[in-house]
Length: 76
Image (cartoon, rainbow, N blue to C red; front, side, top):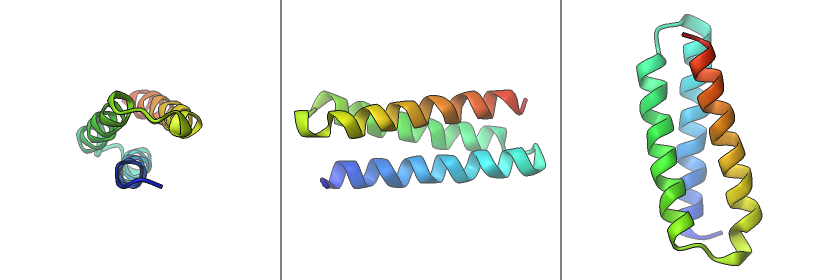
């Protein structure tokens, strides 16, 4: 796994945790949005330097990011 992909996984995990906190106490929407934005930026960087071997991983990350965004939006 490349350094960029590891960084993306860290950002996605941070976003997931922030969305979970937002769901629990309804006060972390902005924080979750910030983490989602960081994960989006990391994903965009990987997509620009895309290695075909990472296509499945990129698709999974894209799907997870979309789910996190939708979940966070639903808590407002």
